[in-house]
Amino acid sequence: MPSRPDTNAKKKRRTMAERADRHALYEEAVQCAEAEIDFVDDTYRALRGRRARLLREDFCGTANTSCEWVRRRKTNRAIGVDIDADVQEWGRRRHVDKLNAGARRRVQLLNANVMDVSCEPVDIVLAMNFSYWMFKRRVRLLEYFRRVHEGLAPGGLLMLDAYGGSDAHRELKERKKKDGFTYVWEQETYDPITGDLFCHIHFRFPDGSRIKKAFTYDFRLWSLPEIREVLLDAGFERATVYWEGTDEKSDEGNGVFTASERGEADDAFVVYIVAER
Image 1 (cartoon, rainbow, N blue to C red):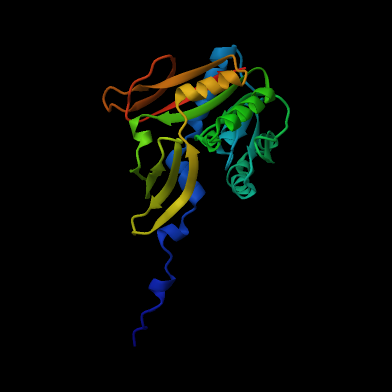
Image 2 (cartoon, rainbow, N blue to C red):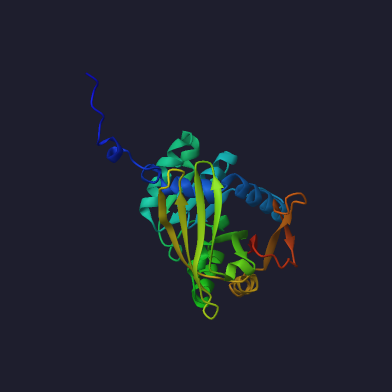
C-alpha cells in the first residue's frame, strides 16, 4: 500500500523570505566593499603621497568594509563604530571571525555612539551609505563633522558618500534584480520644506514571498553645497566632490570617480565627498 502524502508538508515548508538573512541581502544588494576600499586607498595615497594605515568606519554596521581594509595590507588597522550591538555581533561572526588570526587582531569593534566615541587619532574616517543623513539639523551635522575633525590625525581625511538628482526629490520605488532576489528601494515620503526623506529597503523572492521594510531610514536629503559648507565650517581645509564618469555604451556610471568642481543635472547620481583636515 503506498504511503499517504504528508498533508502538512506545505505548511512546514519555509518561504525564501523566511530563510533569508536581511543583512546578507543588504550587503549583496548595495555594498561593494572592494570597490569602496579601492577608492579610499587610492585617494588617500594620491592626496598624501603615502599609504594610510588606521581607518575608522563610523556607522560600521556589519563591519564588512573594515574587514576589507585590514585584508589589504598587514600594516592596516580598522576601528568600527556602531550603536547597534546586534548588527555588530552579526558582522563579527560573518566577517571578523573569518579573517586570519593576524587580521582579526587588527580589527576593533566599538559599540558606541559616533558623537561620543573616543579612540586614537586615525588617518581616515568613513561615513558611507548616507548614514550621516540621520543628522537632520545643521547644528547636529556640524557637531558630528567637528567631532570627526578632532579625531583625525594631521593630514587625515573624512570620506563620505551622497546621492542626489531630480529623482532624489520624488516619492518612488526602484527595483533591481539580483541573483536570487529583487532589491526594492522606496522613497515613501519627501518634504521639500524640511528636506525630510523617509525610505525603505524591501526584498522580493521568486516564490512570491517578500521581506517588507527590511530596513527603514529617516533621513534629511542634504545637497552637495550644504554638505561642503558644513564641512568647511567644521574646520576642514577642503571638501572635494568626486563625480562618477559615464560608460559610453551603457550610459551608466563607469565606477571611476574624479575630483570635480562641476557636475551634471542627472536624474540620479552618487558621489564621494573627501574632506581634508
